[in-house]
Image (cartoon, rainbow, N blue to C red; front, side, top):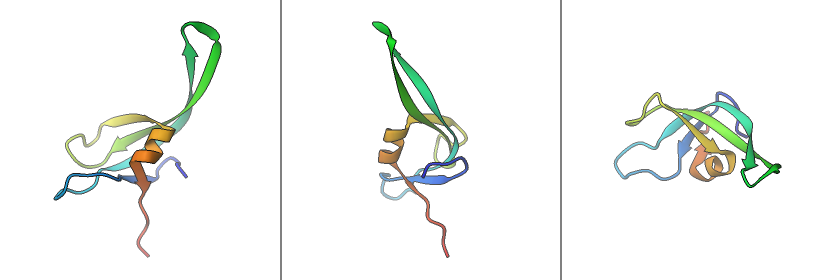
Amino acid sequence: MIKKGNLFQGRAWVKGSSPLLVEVVCTYNKPDIDPECPESVAIVGMVEAVVLNGPDIGKTRKYRRTQFRQVFDPVKEAS
């Protein structure tokens, strides 16, 4: 489940480098209004995450929730 504070790592990464790590800052629902028909509104689930490593460290990225699930896997805690 995607919750604030959870860590996720990217599924695909360049060989020889560490996978991209992100921390979820927030989740929210964004209205998507069709400019042709203002009565038509779709609600899009969004995830905002901060990058924890790599060249974009510290930058905040926004993803659609479905895209986020395709790109990232949750980090499992070592026991």
